Structures are given as C-alpha cells and as structure tokens.
Image (tube, rainbow over all chains, first blue to last red; front, top):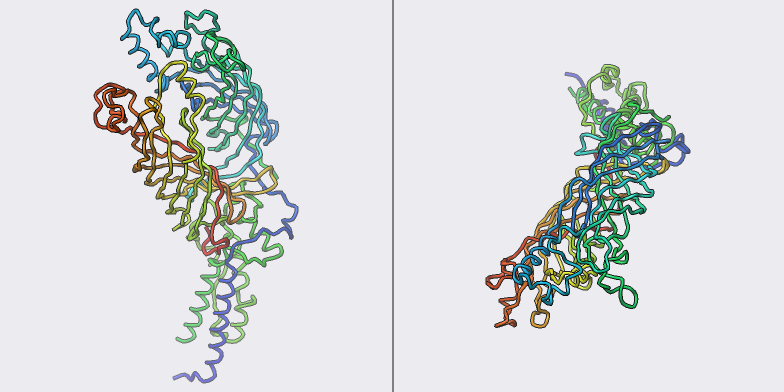
Length: 288
Length: 333
C-alpha cells in the first residue's frame, strides 16, 4: 500500500492550478474589440478581395417589372452591358423592350362600368349627362387609350461603394456587392394623341428623355457570373390614362376639353429588375 | 489511480482550451491578438476575401494555445515541476494532426448577436400599393430573440390621422365618372414570428465595415378599417370594424453598432375588407344594411355584405435598439 502522506498538498496545488487555467481561459472567451493599434493599424479593411468587377465586361440578360402602375403593368426584357474600369466604377448601358403589357384591375373596373353605361343608353349615350361629361376622356374601350412604356435605353455609370458577403442559413456564403447607377434615359412612350376636338381616342408614340437612377445587389455565384436584383426610378411626365386633366382654369389645373402636353402628369415610374450577369474575362483578380 | 485523475483533469483542460479560444479577450494586444482578429473576420481585416477569411479563429488559436500548454510551456510546466507523475505525456504533433470535428460556420464571430436579446423597433410605414388612399403612419415593434435566428414579437401600427385621399383618385373620378370604393385604416396590432436566414457584412468604400442581416416575418393580426363614403356620402357614415388579418414580410437590418441598427421592411397585411356598395338603395338609403358591397358589382340585390381580400403592402423604415446593449460570446458563432 503506497503512502499518500505529503502528496495531498501537491495534488491540491495541481488541481488549483488546473482550475485557475480553466477559469483564466474561460474568461478570455469574450467578444473581440476592434483594435486600432498593433499590426492592423493602417491596414486596408479588406485583404485578398476577389475583384469581381475590375477590368471586366459584364453582360446581363434581364427582365424588368414596372411597379405601382395605375393602369398597365409592363414586363420588359433586355440586357445591361457594363465595362468596369475599376472594382467600384463602371460605365455601360441598360436597354429593354416592353414585351408584356398587363392591364390592372382598375382598367377592368372602369371599362366594366363604361361598357354597361353604353349598353344601357344605346345610341343615345353621347347625349346622356354621363356621355357628355366623359366625351373627351373615355372612349368605347378604355384599354385602347391608356399610356404605355414601349422601350428604354439608358447609358449609365455604376458606382459600387459596398462590397461584402452574405451567409445563408449559416452554411453557405456568397460574395455580394451593392451598386448605385444613374444617367439619362431615352424612353419610348405610347399615349393618347393630342387633339382639339377629340372625337377619336387614337394613340401616338414619342420619345421621352428622363433621368434614371437606382441601386442594386449582385450575388456572385462563381468567378464569372452573378445573380442581380435592382430597383430603378424613371421619373417623367406622361398621360397614363389618356385623360384631359389640365390645361384650363387659372393655373391650368382644370380640364380644357383638349388633349395636350399639359395633360401629361408627373409620374415616378419604378421598376424592379432581375438579371444574370456574365463577366469577361472569366477569371477575376484578387487584391493584395 | 489518484495520479491518473489529475492527468485526466489536465487532459480535459487541454481539450477544453481550444474551444475556449475562439474569441479573444478585450485586452488582447500584440501580433497574436491581431492575427486572431484577422482570421476571425471580427477584426475586419478580411470580410470578403473568401474561404480564407472565414476560417475560425480556432484554426489559428488552438495551436497557439496548445503551444503554451506543452510541458515546456508556462502553465502546465508548473504542474510538471510540482508533480512529475501528473505531467501529461501527450504527443502534441499527433494531437494537432487529429481531424477536427468542429462546426465551421459560414460567418464566424457575428458582430451583433441577437440571441436572448430584445429588439425595440420604432418605424414609419409607407403605403406601397394603394393608388387611391395611402395609409402612412408610425409603428412600434418589440421582438424577443429566442435563438440567434428566431424571434417572437408584436408590432402595432397607427393610421388614424394619416389616411390620405390621393389626387389621382379625384382625377379618375372626374374624368370617367367612375367611383372606386375607398377604405381608411385606424390601427393594427400584430403577433409575429421572425426568422433570420441571412447575415452578412459589407466593406464601405474599402474603408469601414458594417454588418447586416435579412429576415422574414409573418404573423396574425387585428386591423380596424372602414370605407370612406364616396358613392352616397350624404347618407352613409361608416364605423370602424376590427378584422382578423395575416401578414408576411421581408426585411433588411443594417447594424451601426452592436445594439443599434437601421431597418427597412416590406410587409403585406392581408385581411378581408368590406367595401362601400357602388349603388344606392333609394327606397331606404339610410339603412346601413345596404351600405356595403354584396359582391353584386353595384347591382341592386342588396344582399349580405361580402368581404374581399385586401393586400395592404407597406414599406416600414425604422431603427432597431437591441437590449441589453452588451452581450458575451459563448460560442464561435
């Protein structure tokens, strides 16, 4: 039988030292503070950054969906072409054609009432009070007089101030950036034709010039492609309903029984765009 | 046997040390501390550089920590001096070569942990999809994060004084002589569940770092609404009625520090709404039974009021306060 005499204080010391070590290390498991001193002082915020944009062409097929339209929703298909001079600055153009046009429920509602009135009054409709009051504004088929966006071409510059990554479900992460863009836009518009007597409800096409701007997010799927979502504002005046709403009265704020440029109301057109970008060359650079 | 207990204790300490070294103490200084920060991403040295940046601090620090725990090192060397029999006889190279079974998270050392914290979120709501009447107004949300990604909470909206009948509405009515039923809201109260599937960080202008997350929210609500009389305003005067509603939304939260952030949320409040009848029962225009639309599109059946599903999409811009203001890391994530 071995004697334990004299060993107990040593073991006690050993246990205390071990416990102290454990406690000391558990205390150090706290959140980190950003140290502005030491080797990181003055260092760039990001090292070994994958430069997804720098010196690369970007070709992005896209679909744009107009938002908050009173009368007609438009889906435009097109592309965005960019050349990124640096990782944070690029020049390029956006172009899209309005291929799908869907009337809103408001158009259906107005036309339903309009058709019912005309059916009830028959040939005498133009002489009824409603017929006379709506003579300039409401044709036999309301859908045929509403304003449309046909196409958009917009040379633009792109700034990419924010670059980072996103983790999804704490299991995968992808590089991402936030970009802002802006420039002039040339917009093909179809809307009610100007008229003085206004016995017809025909439409005419014109080109409007407007500012365009917005912001977007890119999610880099691999070295040569990314998925993107962007919002675009496109404010300009147009006659969305084909109505006579202005041109008369003291401040031209009342109808004048004519369709003129004054009837074009300022509209903050908005679009949501989804795109898939391809980058050339297919290999990106990496920062220091 | 008793010596082996001490040995086991020391071995346990060695086993635990790498796990406790995920984060560094506030007072950590010098190259080792800086290296730890760089590797973890928390030090913001490499937020977007890819896999290398996302290796946990544990990848670097366990080796450093273990280096201190060899018999030649500081802490355990004392134990070996006191009781050579208790000195652990581990092959550190062999131990280091063992495969790690740690969970590696895509985003280590989250800047602002949400778990077991309250979030107070005052915001202003903007109507996003009603051309005729906009319903802006203030709101307040209170969430409690049960885990870092799951929260339960409530939010309330007040619209009463802020319903705005748009100019567009007047123009359409004047041009077409067609009235569109209008609704105004008074208040809404919601019970919500929030899930945060996405977390990320951005380097701004390559200079500063900010963190953000994206979340989805849904819940069950009560909302009070009433029609604005436009068809027969002389006779009709509607009272507010409370409806059961549901909501779903997505949001983005940008952290400006560990307890304060800016939020932008899109929320769709879905509820069955009763609209004003488009026709007037001239025989008894003052009878409220005939004031609501019966689904007959303005016909004269004057049946029971029929509710229509309404989507009130609202953009909510606000700020978030997380309470308590500070928190402590216990896990690498």
